[in-house]
Length: 204
Image (tube, rainbow, N blue to C red; front, side):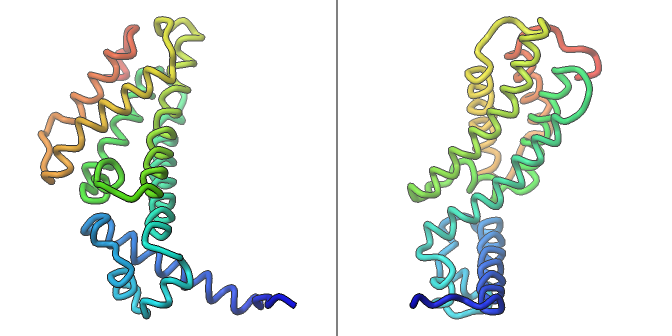
């Protein structure tokens, strides 16, 4: 007969998993993916290394899970940035500004999410992040095209190009820990020009 965990045992396991994940997110934000060894995470969490492996089978599995956690938070932020009634261009400007602003506000974490070399399992989560960000923008573009406010175009392609361009423009400043004061306005202006159509004055 298979062993079944009691609710109390499962609650302890869930709490330990959350402790491990929190410790890993802290290390990722401070020192990047390379610093998230199982031993380092265990030390930060205040538990034995073997205890980490009771929650996650490998470093790659652990970091893939923490990427999902952090990425979910970032995607929610950009979705919220577009969730208001108003001009299409203002919505897109809000999404780009929010994404870039949050990245520059936590450069080490953002660099890990966008560009740091990672294992294949983690790279798959990175692609999910980029696609989710693309989909937020693509939805706004599709609405604009349908309403005749934007020229006919492939919303997913345009959005993917914007995500790629903005991400690439951020990599250098994130790696250096410094960014020009006008970087975010420049990224927003570039994105609005790429959309086509005429931004309303409220989107400036």
